[in-house]
Image: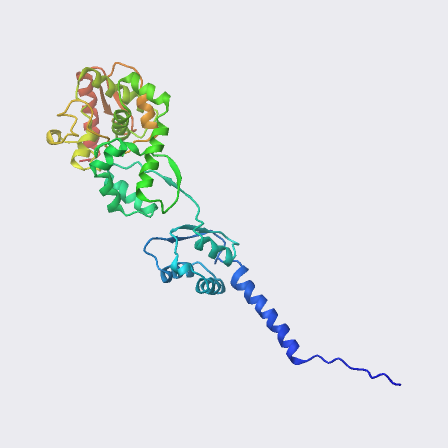
Length: 345
């Protein structure tokens, strides 16, 4: 008996199924597992409280490859992300897959950022700078720093609250709530005032706020850190004998004329509590956020017998110091002549 034989023939539909599987795998790879970013540098997606799913997609589209964006959009459509958008500053690194980026935004897995507190002169300027780097509104920051009840809660008043900000660099989340940010700054200030710094302030008969206030004047007088302890010693000598500080930077602050190169005689009667020509002692608060170098210059001031100083006529950024007013007048004349020679008004 002859056993029948069968010849195997590939059917067209088997080939199509195989091709379809390959296509699905390729598209799945491109849409979900391929590198997400255009270019080879890290990019950031900022999602704020006013963002909708459309605005988030617009932000993502600017940094994504076309097929990555298509994959991201598909994941959005088949998830609850549109109804649960989470604020944050999301770092998208080269090589990260679309699926990873989607999960990062969906789950709110943002990275902390480094924020440096700027050494600015006013709470208005501080508010503006913070709003550039954090998800906060400058008007809300200014309102909070102008609120006496809030300032008292932090241990300050509206004239001294700027003392709370130590110009270091901190790790924070971009969308940190404003009140939590203020609480963080208050804790950082407490940490800055170590027992050693507090003891040095106490030995001078100054509070931390007074140290910062004096440091703010010194920072306005010079950018030369090496000379700051000398200037601190001079102003401290004046405080000790009840002599007006007569600090020109306080006049500029009172007039909000920060770019002035000269202080004129008629300015010295400006009606302001910050006028240290007409008021004895320190002004009611700092005239800027001082540098750490400025603060430590006060705490480690140089003991000497100088009561006067004047900018050097060589415009080196340093000063001539004097024990007597007559010596000081001579130094002041030299500096005034140098200003006139350069046509500085």
